[in-house]
Each structure stands twice: as C-alpha cells, then as structure tokens.
Length: 327
Picture (tube, rainbow, N blue to C red):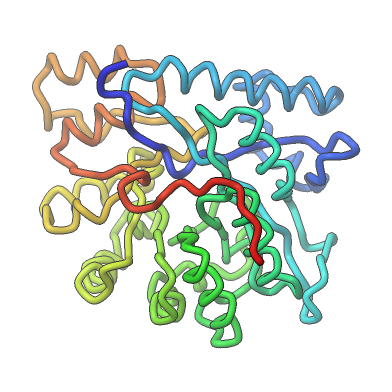
C-alpha cells in the first residue's frame, strides 16, 4: 500500500504463561485495575492462556495489517527484576515477557513484526544475552528501570552499553513516571540517567519523548532539548503522547521543530490513542477524520501530523539485521 512505510518502535507483546513460553504475571498484577481493563477490552481470559495469547497476537496483526501508514511493529519484551547477584528475583517481578517468546513471535511473522528484546543490565549474563539476541535478529533492547529496579546511570553497566553499541542495538528506555506496572523508584525515569549509555556510544531512544507523565508540567523538556543538541545518537519516541497525562509534551514539542528529526514513531500499543489534544487546534474536518479513524496506528499518525509534529521511522536509523553468528 502506498505510504505504508512506518515502523512502530513501541508495541507491547503481552502473554500469559502457558507452560513453555517463559512468561510470568504475578497475582498482584492480574488484579490491578489497568490489567483487568485491558483483559476486558481485548476479551482475554487468563483461564485459557494459549487461546488468549493467540487472540492478542491475532488482534495486533489484524490492526497492523489494516493500517494505512504502518508496515511493521517492534514487539517489546519485558525482563524481570534481578538481585545483587544478578539472579532473577521472581518475588519482586510482576510481569515478564521472555526474549525467547519475543524472538519466536517475530520470526514467525517477519513481514510485520520485529523483535525488541528486554535485557535488565543487572542480570549476570546481560552481555551474553545482548549478543545472543543480536544474533537472533533483535533490532533493539527495551528497559523499564522504574519497575525493574535498576539505575541506568550506574557506571557498572558501561560494558553492557558498549556491547549494545558494538552490536548496533538501540537502547529504548522508559522515561518519566510509570503507571502500568508497579513503579518502585520513579527517580530512575530521569533521562539524565541515560548519559552513561550515550557516552559509551550506544544509540539511545527515550520513550514517550521524555514526558514526565504527571499532566501538570513537563520537567524533562529542557533535558530532552539538551540531549538532542549534545548527542547525535540520541532519539525519543512519540509513544503514548496522546494520553491525557502526556499530551502536554505533545503540545510543547510543536514549538521545537529542530527536535522533530530525532523523534521516532511509536504508539505504546495496546494503549488507546486519544484525539483530545487536537480539539480546537485543527480544522473541524481534520478533527472529524481523526475521530473516525479507529485504527490506533493510523490515529497516532493523524493526531501527531495534524498538530504539526514531525517524526521519523525507526527504519531510517537502524539496519534491520538478519540472523548471524559471531565467530
């Protein structure tokens, strides 16, 4: 389809543990209001995990294939919490989507899906896992420091970041407050803490355009502008910027066109895409088109472009690797 060239760099792969996919969801997570809402909205039943996992993936593929603008999506894993010895701490882990499940799913649908694995740098085999996943065709590494209890600025992680730079795997890190999972230390969502990775040569993608996520003000906007100026290999994605708690950053970014070339397209699927930011700011016909666009990928394109926010596709900054083996 003409114009169908975008890659969504921020799509969550959700899955129930089914006995052999390596995934995990804590009882506390299953009871959380947001998780229960998503189960209801997507009509997923924890009592039949294999069917629920199949339905989630089928729904994602159907919406992606129906998009007029988005050709591929990077499906994201979610690593666990690790103790000081680098071993998985199951008691502190609320949600885990294994890298093997992400890689297997992407390999099964190579035309539509790309693998965005998750590697907590605290794990004892973090560097080996970087190389293993790179060899298997991963295109980036996603982390959520707030919920996974590590500080991206820890200098002990420098070898990990150098491995990412060596394998040309961008480091996609959550920024701001975390609501979807149980945030343990919200201070590690400060984008200033990504400088260690940048200084080691890793390409860094700050999620949600460095939005703070607390509606009232965007304290990280100066940091975003500074990182763009200082690091040519720093980017930010526009995922979740239409959500009510982040739309202020979306509106701010319209005033800084020099940043737009560092913004990458993303949605934060399966979260909703809202058009409220466009109310009173675009022509009535344009707003009507946004409202009538039910496809979440296309609505994200419509709202952001309608508000004059420029962005690029992940495919413009990375070469999609083919499976290879290190000597």
